[in-house]
Length: 430
Image (cartoon, rainbow, N blue to C red; front, top):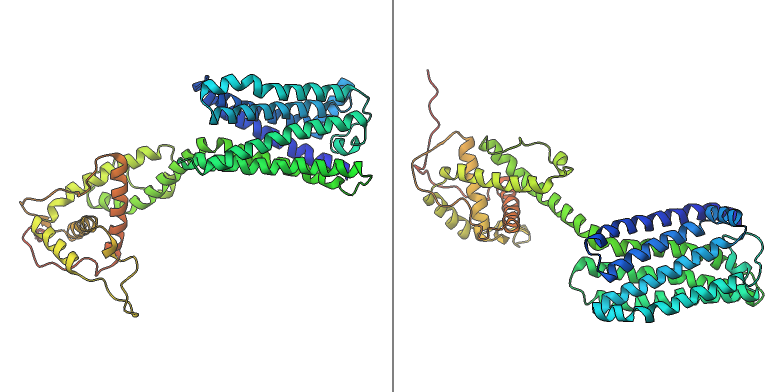
């Protein structure tokens, strides 16, 4: 079983190490922009030292280090020392988060000293007596009854376990007080990941205590489940600590894609009704969704929809608009067989929004019928009150949804009496 686990953990530990180092490189870019940020510096340290620790403890690296140095289990000391340095960085990070910058810097010596003493003690107990044979998977349980190695294991597990408990104690309650949603999720994941890694501590302690009691029945908890809990917890922590950066970007991208899908049918209709308004010809929305400049395309789409509204506005005069307003205001939504109002019906929309969609639908219908606008005064093309990009985008998304309903439901657009604002199509020449 040990040989099989060595293959498995060579893969999982190496993967976890690379993931942590990738997270370090990702956060390092933020640190370069804010080099005086103590918490950000410490966050980079947690990912760097955790990544190095996993690479040291991967059995393939562990065995190689033992052959090169002549100390069979040196990988344990190097890996555990890196973990303690990562724990120190995590403690400094939490201090930087929940203390003022000046206070956090003054507390640095107090925070640092216990971890450095733990590393010195671990090294002293590790080299106090020979530890023969390479044990990349079962070091803790194999040497649990060794006088000095047993103390080494207890010092390491106690130092790391107390740090994880401290991180979870600070991050979970704070996640409920933070208003920024991505940061709140980040703190929750950091707390959950810390609890998972605490499972690593518990598993190792169970195996060690079992050996102290003269049984190997609990070895599996230390040899198999403990490393798996550490790997899962570490990956959750990586996701949590990097989430505010890439999570907000991903959320923005998804919102842009939803907006593009919503606006595309209306935009395509206006491009067809008013050729020439589009800088780029309409194409499949699926292709545009993968464009890197989706934000620019949305900006152009809004401009072109507004241009289309202005070009089609002469097809609906102010009198027709007023009749539409009265008809929409006075019409009742169709009743279902049970007698209730239609769920999601047009009456649930804002009156101005629904009127804008109805004016657009009538103008497109008249344009497609070939009617010609007469010389008359028309009102504005839009009733949207805001002028910012976000306001325009939100408003036009609602207009596009209402337009789809108006276009799809023939009864949604009330019939109007003939109006001289548009004339019949020109007669074909004989």
